[in-house]
Length: 294
Ligand code: GUN
Image (cartoon, rainbow, N blue to C red; front, side, top):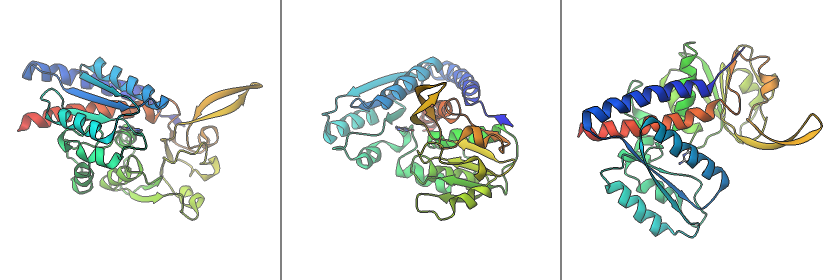
């Protein structure tokens, strides 16, 4: 059984991205710019934004941080996005989700210039992903599912014809994951909260992607012998360890059970998480390069 080391794969990717930025700087006398927008103070968002900012700067991306108060209204945020859309220095725009309830997320995401859509959430990029050919290097693809795909490719197992089951149908993970795996010629099933016989479906999965946000929902007995398990869940739970209640992070898969049957599995933390940010940096570089093609 192999534990897929997302930290290491993400690190290797960042080394390559850094080299690419050095080359771009030589050629254009400019580095890619990423605007990171956070509204309010959701604790998890602050952690992510800080990590995204640091890692972007580490590879040589110029970061423009915009942290707005909880009382920011939709018009104010639209104005900021419009300004960033126009800025020559900004190649990628990321609006951290969730936004406060009084702001319509869809309206904001749709207002981002699709060419600067670092998350790949704009309908234009969602549409492009669904019709593009498998070797299109210029696409802005949602970061978490793209990170999962890179981890799968790293295993060199050949994806053609594999049965893939995705649990979760979100716009951020489940749906783009479906597109990416279809493109790799997997046979894909997308399961969700209304799916019947989830356990049976999982037992038939050569590749299982869990993205539901329910701690340890996928049991070891659901895993086919030799399957590859990619756990997108990041759930904080209280668990008793050595007689003490500890606040810990767990995925959507019961890791200790699942690793008995899996051929390869991602841990939480240290699996899919680090890949998401590395792919955001990649998207920023792609947006920069696309802007130079004219
Ligand atoms: N919130 C949770 N995941 C993400 C993500 O990938 N991008 C953004 N912008 N917000 C998120």
